[in-house]
Image (cartoon, rainbow, N blue to C red; front, side):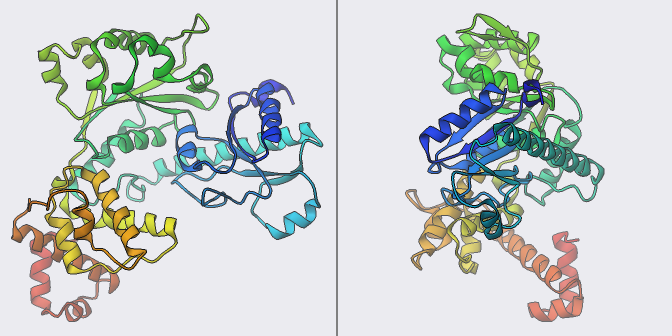
Length: 443
């Protein structure tokens, strides 16, 4: 098989032997593979999110990377297939102790051509699986489309629907919202639902772009640029907090967006990958234009469609759902049970102002789990960690209504809609239950 056939596929090499890792890297790069390496001590999670590898090549003795099981599903995407390599020993014996765990097992470099062909075959199958998953998501929407952005409130349902419809068109999209509200997650959702999902998603922190190194540090090295436009489809560039971009750089950004040309400083050449621009800001850019700190022509190139990501305080009914989601993530990470959720915990969650939005809620869940490992802590203590006591931002009536909505909704699901059983479990009459369902807008 030609070297060209391997072009634009990406592999993560997991090998604690430095010489073997170097040899494998050289072999794969010579055959046009894009290569990331781990020695087993780093965290693979961020690499899986950012690099979108097609296959993992791992030493047969490495089952976990920093506590992460290579066979586990980490994101909504299928895990890349794992091809194992064995330095010494009996291959059939190894296969017996890890059934269905590896795509293939090879003696290290005894047959490089066979290893390369197996990696290519695994990578192609993985891309096909991603394509099928994306097509199924489109065919099943609505009502079976699985929302990536969690939330049952009307504003979140509308945002998810807008993201889905915009995934089919190639136009710039700008997300507006407060810090920590989930703008980058919304951008990743838009990328993952689009035909670009197999291309790269490159997030750029606009506040940290050195003026003298725009082309190099803004979009990464040459091999990353090449991955923006591959056989599997073009990628996405996410300009985070675009309002913080220095005015000196904004003119260059205008040209890059207009021409789709990226200059490489150390090569003296230009690359023309086809990419989509998604941006995000936590400030009003129209005011920035009036102040002269943001270019009007750049704003017009970015805000073809503007979507608002609501702050957490505007979607209070989603707070228990998001908290439970983060708690489940943390308990899986620390391999423990979710601590008891009390009425005081619910009141603490619903009365807090959440100035840090969803990011702050995630940190609260993590602190609650860390405290629970020693049998201590509460949600209130996790919220007040290194901060002043929270100010109540909701009226007592709103807090009680949200609690009732969550409690009744949970009971409806638990008892499969049998109203008499639900009323008995809640300790109220059937008539009172009916009135509350109507009043609270429960389905």
